[in-house]
Length: 120
Image (tube, rainbow, N blue to C red; front, side, top):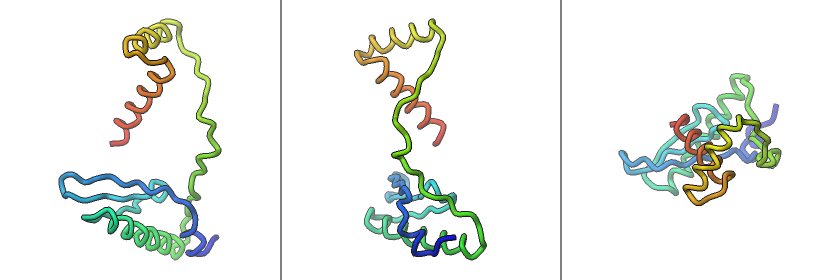
């Protein structure tokens, strides 16, 4: 197991979301479940997030819990091959043409839209 300082140096992904209702920001580390904080200013939110990460990691170390490593985005090529029915291929191609974009762009749009909806 790494030390607290070693874990603090790892590049965990920080997610910052504006909180429209409270007029501030919510910050979390998706790879560290439950590690979340908020603040009125962006600068304070980032500072609070570092402290929340430190406390989260310290508690996990103290409890002997497994701490996930950060995801290395470079391990992904950004490409995958997908076989679909010819009828769906046709429909996607038609919709992409209607939007004036490539089918790849249209599929990325659909995947992003769906992924965003399922994580709200």
